[in-house]
Image 1 (spheres, rainbow, N blue to C red):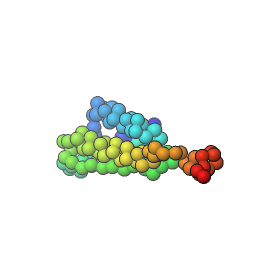
Image 2 (cartoon, rainbow, N blue to C red; image 1 turned 30 degrees about the vertical axis):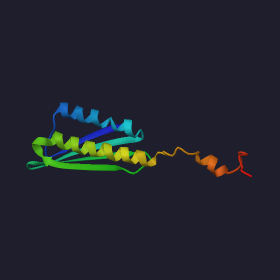
Image 3 (cartoon, rainbow, N blue to C red; image 1 turned 90 degrees about the horizontal axis):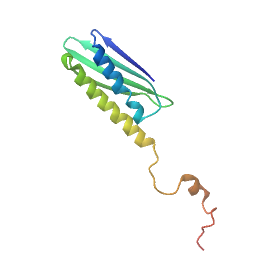
Image 4 (cartoon, rainbow, N blue to C red; image 1 turned 120 degrees about the horizontal axis):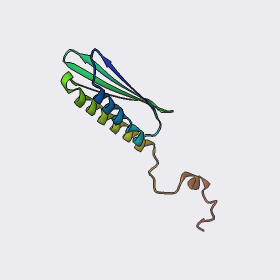
Length: 118
């Protein structure tokens, strides 16, 4: 998995850069088909906009963003990160089969198992 961090019109420290990479690697625990992550910090005056793009294999891309004061870039990243975790978790819950009844192949077989009521 590749994590790309970009800063427009500003910069972040090396420690914060490593913190972002560590946090982004957690997306793999929620959805194992993540192939690339792009984090963009866009500084405009005293404001910052953080955007996170997650590219998942054979799936749509996940996108979140957060805005705030430039002095709170870490808080903006955490907010966007939490939104991304929620989005990925929600998508994974949606695609998983949570039914506790018979599997689809048994339902499609119908009465082929010899359990017909007479």
